[in-house]
Amino acid sequence: MLTKTRSTAALVEELIDRSASQAPGDRALLEAVVSGYLAAVAYAEVERTVETILTNRFQEINDEKVSNFIAETWGKKQGRISKSDIANLAKQFGDQCKAQFNNTIDAQHETFYYNLLKCRHDLAHGEPRNETLLTAKNGIIAAEKLLEALEQSIKQ
Image (cartoon, rainbow, N blue to C red; front, top):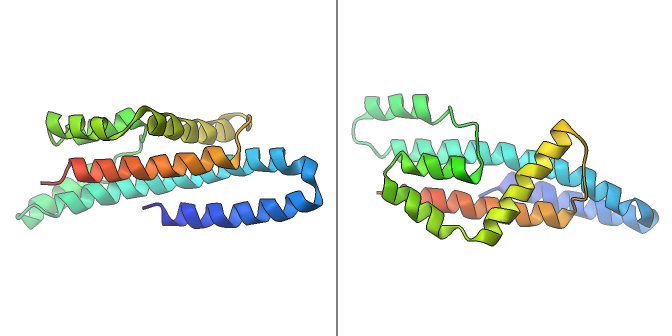
């Protein structure tokens, strides 16, 4: 689901591997900085994907005008993407949708996703900590799992 993020991650990993072969001592710093960048790319792509999932679901409504209205008013307003924010989006379709979403996400994926969002936050509002490419890669996998869970939970 996060094709741009996955492509960027693969390219970045290749570049870090090349750089690290020439300056091995710089690998940790490079990974910390680049992990924040990957987290920011993933964050933006998750936002767009949530919007797409919602818009696609709204377009299933048989009344085109109502479908367009809902897509325009709800589909483009979802800027918050924590796990609980996405669960609350699912709840807008009914309590059972939220329950299904939450039951699909295990604690490990929730932690990996949280770490991805924290990585982005640390880069944007502070400085990189001890993040590695593994932090970003695990977070990307977890983000895709959350997006798939959202999509499945709100289907008819």
